[in-house]
Length: 330
Image (cartoon, rainbow, N blue to C red; front, side, top):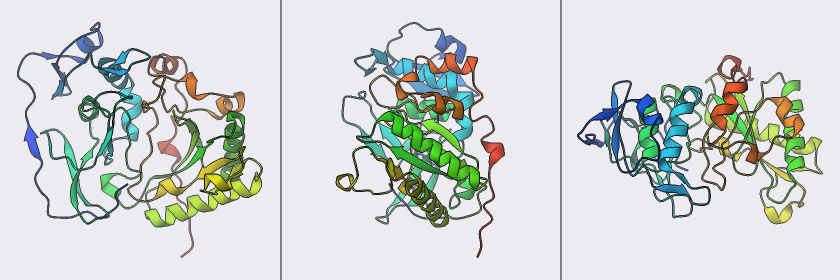
């Protein structure tokens, strides 16, 4: 993923206008039944063009772009606090999960309400990165085929200081029980250090453990801390956990405790993000008791998450109130 520094000079993003015609409200949009074609959604004063609503994104599940847009609209109050004011890496699946995807880092054109931030990537190219700001911005990106939401670990206000670190528990060939057990070892390590720990399913194959932080230290320092934490987890549970990147050098039962995603410009699927995976799974926030009871990836999809939150939406509700200061020596 790209890394770089902000630049004062910028190439202007071409601003587009929404399709002409009548608009529809969010409530009217959610009440539609199997719509086809295009329409304009007006939300919080922003006109969002939504196109090809009947395009199938998950062929096996017969779920369409409309289904995905409804999911994100319904979940937006829970999701937006984790996206707002963060640069985005757009992973676009314009023809659904079984067709080729591509990464978009340079936003060349966008409606007037879409905000951007100018960054320089590793190759020295100046790029206009999309920024999540409103529900309208989220829906615009989803309409482009951005099934998954991949925000930076920092906001535009503190672009060089992440406000969380994370550990990605990647099983590869390891059994799911080992992923759950390694997550509990992570909690043990973090609890001993007085660090808050928030687990979520990846929505793909593993579990992510997040630690909310005050934006005080740069990406390099946070990445060092994350690596030290990962090493400690591997040290405590060597039979089932490792920081060995090479799959050939791991034991089949070992879960890879990946801290590499904490580098500047790296992204990972956000909490509540849909995943471009079979079953239309969601990266779901968990309470630790759910980890202890054996929560599975397949338990959470765009079809049931909204209902589940109405019954029990307390996981991660204290995330932003739990930001840790990490008193580090010089």
